[in-house]
Every structure is written in C-alpha cells, then in structure tokens.
Image (cartoon, rainbow, N blue to C red):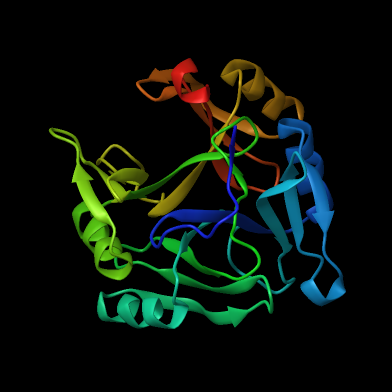
Length: 259
C-alpha cells in the first residue's frame, strides 16, 4: 500500500477527476468496479464527489454543466507549487489555458490547459487537499500516460513548464517524465496505425488485482473493454470505457510492484 500526506513534487501527476453527465451512474459504475466509497460535497461545491479507498481520496467527479460541449474524460492534474508561475511558463512554452486558474478555498487552486500537441491536462497547487492520498494499489491510480503524435515536442513542453527530467527509451517512441530521478509519467508517440480521429490525450491507469476479472466486471456494469487483456513488462492491462464514455486502463502490476 502507498499512502501520501504531503504535497506532490512539481510535474508529478497528483490527481485525476472527471466531469460526468450522470454522477449517480458514475458512482454506481466505479463503486461496483473498484469498491470505492464516496464523499459528496455540498451544493457550494456543485456536489463534487471524492472517491475513497480506505477512507482516503483517490479520484474525483464533478457534474458537467448541461450546456457543455466537451466529452466525458478522465483529466490528469500535474502538481505545481505556484499555479500562477506555471501558467505563465505554460504560455511561453506554447500551451493554452482552457479553464483559468480557480480557487477552491482551503483545498487548493487549479486550472485546465492544453499542451502544444493538443492534449488537455490539469494543474493543481495543493492547499489542504494534496490530491490522491492512496496510489499504486488496487482501486487507486498507478500510472498516467500522454499519447500524442508529437511526443518529443510534448516531453520538452512538460520539462519547460514543470522542470521534470526526460528519460527517453531506446528504439521506442516513449519518454518517461522524471522527478528526482524517479519516473512519474510517460509520453507515448501514437503511430500511424492509430485512427486519426483519436486526439492526443492523457490516459489514467487504475491498478487491479486481477485484470481479467476486472475486465469482465466492466462489461457487467455496462462499460466496454477494447481488445483482450495483454501482457507487458509493467503488468497485464486492457483499455476500458465507462457508460458515460470516459476511457481508462486497468492494469494488474507484477507481484514485485504490489508488495
């Protein structure tokens, strides 16, 4: 188990959430899939809902405005210790702000932006809410990954904005973003075989103890899975979609990474 109680280092994925078209159906689906409990905020928060593992926040849901034109997606928030400074650096590096900086009061400050390759992401300056308090165990986030058609430009953008290190893998279009020498996220180059209508995007990986059983559970709950569960050096994984349309991945890490 991995519990955290101090703010994440700049450039580290700190939180994931979604704006959903049906908060009730969303909690039913993910509660049934991961066994999450939920903490629902008051009307002043728009009934923002924290998903909990062992009583600790791991992800969040907000209610999408009825006139919204954007899809339901999981958004990855990267930590910053100075939101204003990061937004200034973001603009200088070719990014654009989609949702200007907002202040939630005590919990912290955030914004939503788009990188120069077209992928949307969030920024989070922690107050009393650091982000995910549990990671790297079943039901919690274990990895965040950007898929883009210009991975080198994207990696340089996140380096310039957040000061992360870059660790490109040899002979493969994949660069790890590092903080203090530790990999915290990945940047993947989408090959020509990926349909053009799939835009650049950040993908959230949730850890599970049994990838096949979790994939079946997704379908039982009204979601979909894309292809079979496949093996990788990092575990057995598959891509899934919830009934509201948000895509995510389920991954069963190797035993050594779950100890």
